[in-house]
Image (tube, rainbow over all chains, first blue to last red; front, top):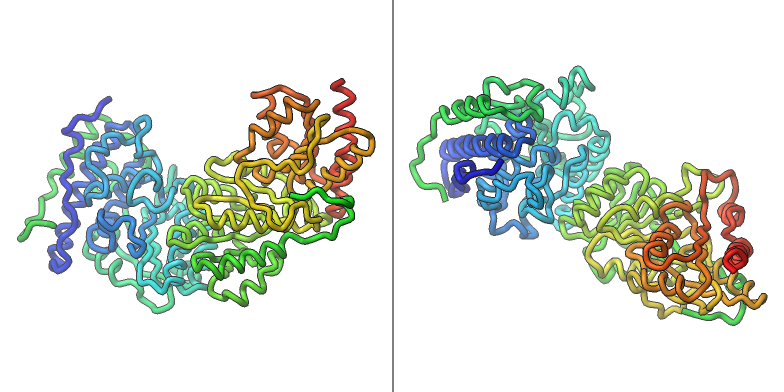
Length: 304
Length: 321
């Protein structure tokens, strides 16, 4: 199946000017997130593979980070002093590629190559092939240690650059995360922020049924983190929390973003079947209709 | 390189970790990007003096090898040049996936230093032996694998690694070895060194076993057998030309290494010979979980003594004629 132009028509919305009001920023992020979901839905449907459930639980977090939090632009993507974002749950690569395209790091047309032979857009991200990817993730439990290493490098440099890492909640069952959290706390890496995509579902079951993580906030606190819980689909909450770190001097931050896999599609949301199911033609049309029905926010000024 | 007047077996012996820490400190003085990363292995890596000189630049993540290698990758992302120092058995076994994904596949500029490799931990047993490391790491793309033979080559390989951009694994021996190389030796990636010329048979070796191969060649010479000794510090990328030349010009090849007999230097040589110039190859190494014994005892037990290597060469010559 080939992708036509119609399937890669996402506008590059970019970021708003830095002096935009919070309301403008939030509205803008919401619209970018909606566009990313539409594009990601097309991506997965036409590639016939992907992890749409996890993509949709993480997209609001990604859109907020790239839209208004991270100090990275397509022009500064190799700057030593850029903020770093590491996607530890590498299987939502589709969401990352689409987000990078929405903010101009990746040509939108390139999304049409997703998972195709020789494409730079592999099922898991490759920093050697895609600008904006910081680490080649995919096996779980790798991103957090890498993020700790980067945060340590910033501390050695006496630099203010920040490190953000997005981990899945099921992923926290990997012990390497907890090794890294101990080190982050020992080295007082307060410019490191761990964001947990807390959708409470893993590949085939709930986290509770599998290897329950709760009480997750208590565990993170016991490992020396300042812990904040947010609605992971509320762009205002995400923006406020992710731009306000650190909350406690000397302590790394642990943001538990409560999300739903497949959000906000009626038949996908919070449904374990959509971990890596691919929508058929009817499901694709319905999901698209639902996403297009969400009202476009109005802008007082053009995005930059 | 040196052709010594007296037997190599009678030369003074050195622990390569001393050359390691001395060179690392020298490199760190010259380049602020260089940092050490350890898993509580400060003492076993002999890094106490480094920690004293560069307290902020020795990162100890505690006993956590997966985190250690991931952290090194992140440090490299931030522009640092991390030298990870940890017992080779734990570094390569416990963090193998991090070495593959975070270092090699991510092309992170990380230098992995496998301390006390092979059977250096002797009586501590197979849990602490690191005889599989070369085979495991040789299978990983975009990762250079170096096994220095003496303190001079250890230092030279470290200097080369610091100046090169990309993932490197270097074994750093604990078991004392005599100097094989002259002090002005310069490491060249992927190049074998003919440390002794010969036409009858070729001995290919590296690491702690190289001097034993040289001593074996001395014994063979006394019997009128001319053994070529090739030092092969770079297991990956292998010097294919030198191996093919040896296969063509001598009656056969004996490989000798402080590692398993499958997939290491011997495996690399055999793969090369089979594809380019079929010849007899004898692979010496440690083919099983070793019994209790000191490092020296175990090397001797598995035919990695000068006598054992010479025997293998004689055997090969006998069966090939």
